[in-house]
Amino acid sequence: MSDDAARNGPRVHLASLGCAKNLIDSERILARFAAAGAIVGAPPEEAEIIIVNTCGFIEPAKRESIDTILDYARYKEEGNCQRLIVMGCLAQRYSEELRQGLPEVDGVFGLNQDEEILAACGFTRTCDSGRFLLTPSHTAYLRISDGCDNRCTYCTIPLIRGSYHGRPAGEIISEAEELVERGVREINVIAQDTTVYGAEAPGGMRIHDLLARLAKIPDLHWLRLLYTHPAHFPDGMIDAYAQIPKLCPYVDLPLQHLNDDILRRMARGVTRDESLRLIERLRARVPGIAIRTTFIAGFPGETDEQFNELLQYVRQLEFDHLGVFPYSQEEDTPAALMPGQVPEEVKEERVAELMLAQQEIVFARNASLVGSRMEVVIDAPGDKDGVWLARSRTQAPDVDSITFVEGKGLSVGEFIEVEVTGADGYDLIARPV
Image (cartoon, rainbow, N blue to C red; front, side, top):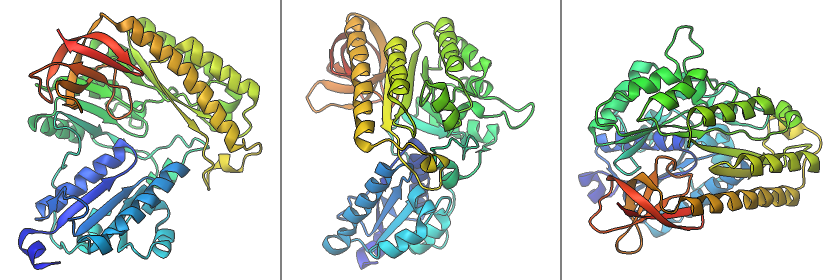
């Protein structure tokens, strides 16, 4: 390290790619760097240590990770970078390939190797120091488990993160209380599959019981559940949405498809009718509940008829938020070896058709919301003076549309009531009441 870095602690820049679960890993290691005396959050051109926390879920995520690593490698020539570290899911799965193929990289580390990363950067005495939040200070993610036992035939998560293992409820609640003490007012509960929490231990605290306990934390304003699974959705969860005021009426329910043959070959463990009944029960029990889902277009063997069946249900069910991904043929997964791999151009056409159908639904819904009132939280100032980026209870951070609030004298982290005045594509426009 330079003399300046030695006096003041090395400057660290971290790029966190992929999902919110990866983000928590980034927050944890940054907290340890900060506790050890490093200066975290430095611009990449000034940092002596650059870390890329990679995603390796599907092919586009892998390409983004590689491109990001190569982009940051230039700071070894143009900037102050003395150590370029690669960590995370891609490093977990392809560590040897990365070491051989990227000589610019000084260290490749998989999951749960924080100690090794810090040691490689010259820190020999470190401790677990919580999290250095990378989200706005009023919102945070809370991971309740890691790994997955679902073994969907297209998915690499079990290959990367291993089998399911839940965290003790007391540990989760303590972390949530600490976050709220730091000023967090919105907690977003995450895992590979949140709805299975507690099911592995007879008599254990199930997910709806855990949410009820978290909702009792004073000063917590919103509680949101992400990454649920239609095959494991307990009846108690539907009651929780109806009975826990702090629990946002928002269900993140990745269905992936609605044709029974494809669902069977995906090994989703649920039928189309079971998914439809779950949606019906949610909407009947919790009027106005928002449902977000994702679908995979072009799964091996998907026929035009099967795709059109999915398209018909998308138009019929009118989801509040929807994401569509072209099937990614991932090595070492059963689906990668299935016959009937769909051409890339067909996948992209199907993605576009599904998203066009969803666009019509969302635009019509947004128009119907004009004049209605809702509570939002201010996330950040917008590009224009007097315009703020905000979200309602039915808009999750990072993945959904947003609400532009036009008003003076507002502040980040403030919860206010607004009236919807218009829409800008998928997003809403509102003003304070």
